[in-house]
Image 1 (tube, one colour):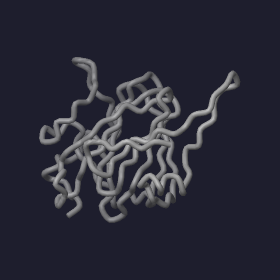
Image 2: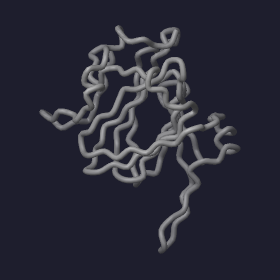
Image 3: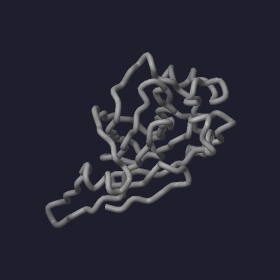
Length: 182
């Protein structure tokens, strides 16, 4: 396993070893000992799976009281995965990093607590799974606008295309108006 830092401290790209032959392949997607040695010392309590169609944009989601670290991986298709630092005391507050995750590259993104998370489906069908360090608490979830001009996220949408959003994501607050971490 190899771990690469991103431009945001704590957000990491995880590349695991893949063993393949004519039958297919095998890869270990989680090993607490190896991940801890690589700097991801997390206890996961919930696994989630989502299916999305091309141009679906989910996010930017986070929980304030029950902050979740997320280990995100794509098993079908391809996404542009984004993490945004929403810790007001952080020197990187409001900065974002994006990374393409796909079934082909088999990489994962570690999004630590204190970051908002979202993704854009780049393929016709996406199967995305993520492990969480705290339970989903709907009353605690916050959402930031995907197109907040203060963030300036460069989503790879084709010119003139609009993302497919949930009603909650479409009505999200801007970062400056959102409840965030201190």
